[in-house]
Image (cartoon, rainbow, N blue to C red; front, side):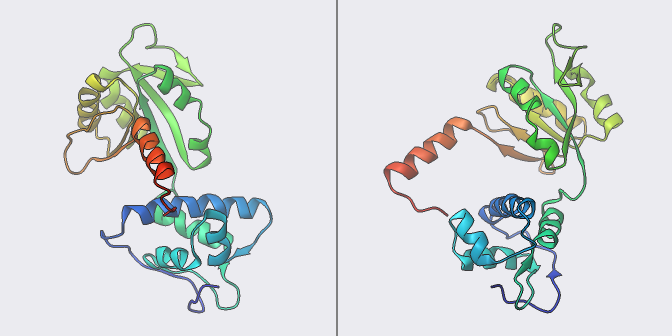
Length: 223
């Protein structure tokens, strides 16, 4: 059971929070949402850790970067901790999202319901293929990439996903940055060079599989 003050107390995290901690916050959030759906109003660091394969000490240490959230004798109130983690992650507000590139991967991402469930609403898609521009996919209009600045302003889009071939990714990223996009998730297997204020996350599925195979053959314990 987490030791805490009488009331949860959040604090502003500093820039030294390890990336792995932020990643685990998302895992805690998913498990808490599952617990709430199953009728669990409270939980503990022991239960969260057991569900995810972490120690209770790891859970408490991760949450301690952001404040105190437990109650003596109770543990964590599930819905309260969900709200706190959403505030930390910035997902306590809806986000308008754009996808660039409507090949097989882009189309698959357009149909992924998990984005909307976590507050990310795809409001626009972009491509340069004349056979796709002007149409609608999953109810979302497809615009030409040249129009991204105008569309981004109209819909207050700050986040975008790049799902184009590697040779085109930098040019697309430059267009998005010029359009005022603040955050880019890049599925192209290439490192982007962008202004410092534009935050990027690279998702290279082959690299993820390489990491997985390394963990399997070397019996690497779970973080």
